[in-house]
Image 1 (spheres, helix red, strand yellow):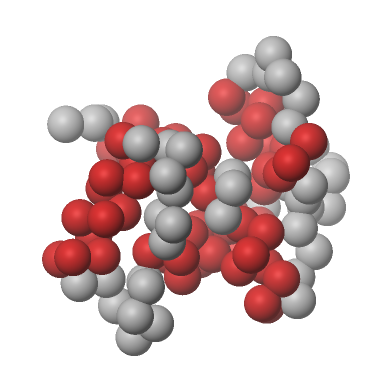
Image 2: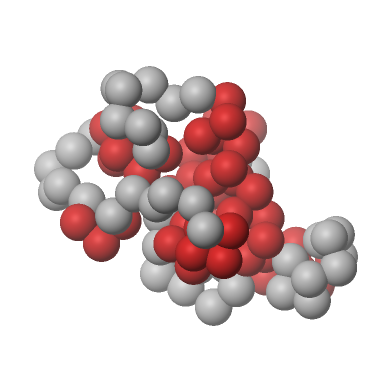
Amino acid sequence: MLKQSNLILAVVLVAAGAIGASAAIADEPVPDTGRLKTGLTSTAQLLQLMDTDKNGKVSKEEFMRFMEAEFDLADTNKDGELDPKELKRFQYALSHPSKGPGR
């Protein structure tokens, strides 16, 4: 089982491909996830994805917006809750990042 910090990192990295769709629905500014610089550390990639105001830091608002979009993708029946089936699908997506939640 992953440590909690590794799980959070995995969730955020899986969200990289998913954030665009959710943010478009919310009409929020979105980082261009299709152009992540290669060779960056995972921390630098997270900063690039989450730091929408490009100030070099991730605010609580930026972090929560990013994670909320991930939740919305995992909540496939859109009832505002993750049931065991959705959680299982989400857990699978964490271990298979190319699949991503909601795909």
